[in-house]
Each structure stands twice: as C-alpha cells, then as structure tokens.
Image 1 (cartoon, one colour):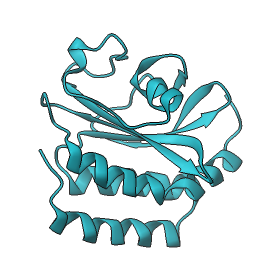
Image 2 (cartoon, helix red, strand yellow):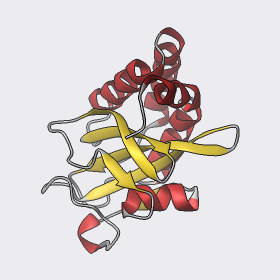
Image 3 (cartoon, rainbow, N blue to C red):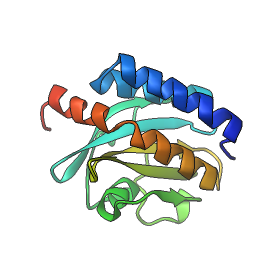
Image 4 (tube, rainbow, N blue to C red):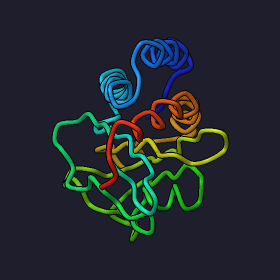
Amino acid sequence: MTVARRAAQPALLQIDAIVSRLSGVQALQEVCRFLRESFRHYRWVGVYRRDGGVLVLDAWDGPAATEHTVIPIERGICGQAVREARTVIVDDVRTSPEYLACFLDTRAEIVVPIRLDGEVLGEIDIDGNEVGAYDASDREFLETVASRLGDAVSAAGAERPSP
C-alpha cells in the first residue's frame, strides 16, 4: 500500500488545520481519527508520549483498545523507534522478536518518532492487517505528519499526570 502524493498534500493541510484549532490530547485524538479514516491501510493509529523511561498512550483510533497503554522504552517496536530515534517499519510482525502483540489480525507496523527541538517526545504507531502494508511513501508522509505534532505532544504531557 502507498500514500499517493495527490492524497498526502490535502491530508497534511487537514492536519495543519487540526493542530491550529485544537491542542494537546484533543488534537492528537483528532489526528488519529483523521489518519485512520483517510488511509484505510492504517487499521489502528496511536500516539504515544515519552514520559521518562516509558511511552504513554495519549490518543488512538481503531476497532479496539490496546492493552499496551504504557510501554517501557526498552521493549517493543515502539521502544525501538524511540531508542534509535528513527522510523521503524516491520513488514511482518510475526517474524519480529521486538513486537508486542496487540491484535491477532495485525501483520505490519510502522512507528515514527515525534520530535520537538530535536528531542524525541513521542511517536505515531500504526498497525496494518496485511504483510508489507507500509513502504517509503508511508514513511515520508508520516514523518511529515510527525513533524507537525511536537507541540501537541508537549501540551498533552502538561495535561496528563505521569503514570
């Protein structure tokens, strides 16, 4: 699956509109909803915020909640993306020893760090139901989305107490 350029630009404009009218958790929740609704291969979309040595789920959209609302940074693909400060794409989670299972039908995952002033504050975590669901177009698009979410993640941290 890919994110077509003709779909990316309008989506980025919509995300800009969301973060200009909403802040913190509300903005993140709306971005999750928008991404999942707009890109059908994004079956579950979440935004985690780094809080010390853990990642805390601040917003999500999908068919079901995940049990992984707090993830130690030393665990999982989410932790790997933060530890290495880079986007991680897993074509088939069933072959990845790092994967923390959330849903039986998840087959692929992409995790993109969210930065503010060079510091990794959190990440976008997206699950898909097809092997190889994410490619370079998803990486490019989601890295651009992530570049727009730093202030919202920072504000979410101020709204919510540490776990």
